[in-house]
Length: 169
Image 1 (cartoon, rainbow, N blue to C red):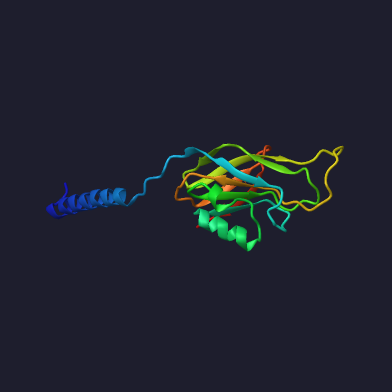
Image 2 (spheres, rainbow, N blue to C red):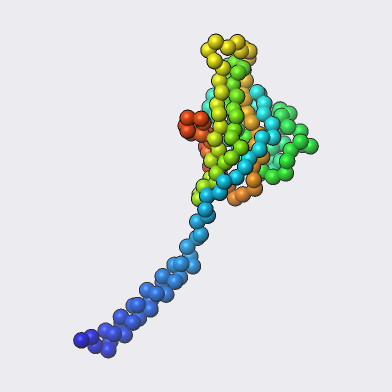
């Protein structure tokens, strides 16, 4: 048989456990559900001025950020009057030695629980028997994306290979 002090100790410990578990529930963050979203193409170009050979993603929270990037590269891919409101995402294929390369992003994307947007796209390259222009190209596609609190972006190709990622945090 337990004494009075043991019973009081058990009741106090149980109350403390109950209090801590209730406090812990209040501190837990709600994990957002994955969200399917639509993206839309604003403009594509065969020349985005990149010198790297690999694919890259660039995020522009506002159209003004895009216009600044464009000016820094000395390009005029999209004029201010043709830009939608809201954030933009640029998908660059990387520099190529000939023409015939294209990226075709899918219009559906998913924002995962970590607030990372996953996109898919078709990477096209010229066939071996095709005639192509002999010039440096750097294909890119500018996308309009829904406004969200993004933590990053990932793009996969038709073979589900990760082509590029961008972390914002």
